[in-house]
Length: 116
Image (cartoon, rainbow, N blue to C red; front, side, top):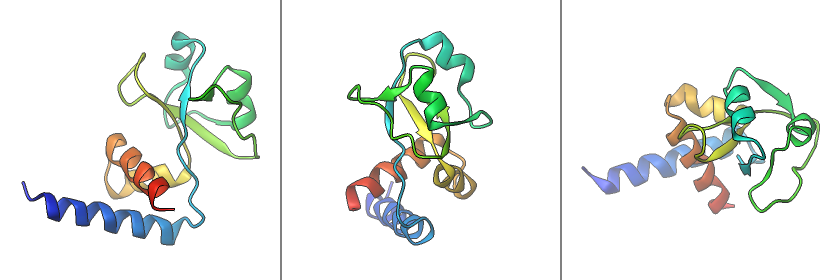
């Protein structure tokens, strides 16, 4: 495995993402108040306004309320119920078109957060 090659691939993906989706909108890590409810609503096909996710008990990882601008997101559980929960926006979906891996799309998002 050529680590230098893959680090360059990731850096190029972040740069491309930032050019395409500037300003970058993060995929905030979230906490869920009811894991069974979250599992039933999770999936990229289920888009809801951030205010609706807030009403359903989804919060930022640190417990703060979500920023409830007029945007839609999908709740994804890459590791299944009980694992990490992320809110996925359109830039997450765009990354999936490039590489159809939730782990990859989340990693690109986290890297882009760190670049800004």
